[in-house]
Image (cartoon, rainbow, N blue to C red; front, top):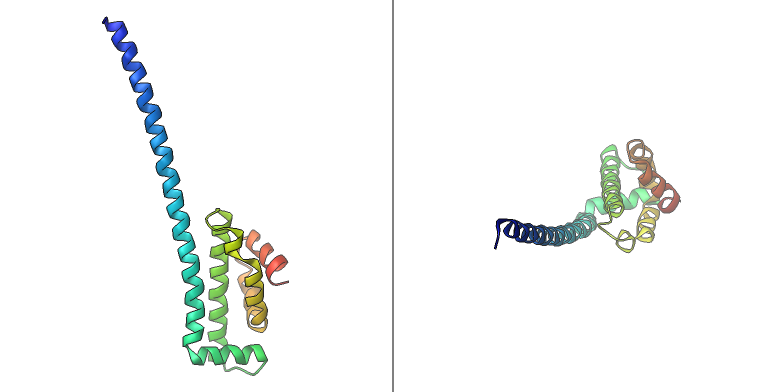
Length: 151
C-alpha cells in the first residue's frame, strides 16, 4: 500500500469516526433533553403538591383563606398570609408557563382549566395580588392569565 492510498484510507476512517461521534452526540443530547423534561415535570407536580399540602395541613391558613373567599374581614397578618399564598401560586403558574413554552411540559400537564378553576375558587384573594404581580410578569404569561385563566 502506498502512502497516498494509506492517506485515503485514513481519511475515510476519520470521516466514519466523525459521523459516529455526531450520531453519539445527538443521542446524548436527546437523552439529556428527556431527562430535563422529566425533571421539569417532577418539579411541576411537586410544586402543586406542596401548595395543596401547605393549605391542607395548616388549619389556620385554610381558615384564613376561606375567610378571604367568603368576604369576611381579615387582620393585616391574615391578609398578608393569603397574599403570600396567592403570590406563590402565581410564581408557580409562571414557572409552569415557562416550562410549557420550552416544551418541557405539555398543554395537558399545564392544564389551563384546572388553573382557571383554582383561581375562580379564590378569586377574591388572587385578583388584588395579580394586579401587582402582572407588572413584572412576562407579556406572554400576562396574556395567558388574563385571556384564559382569570377571565
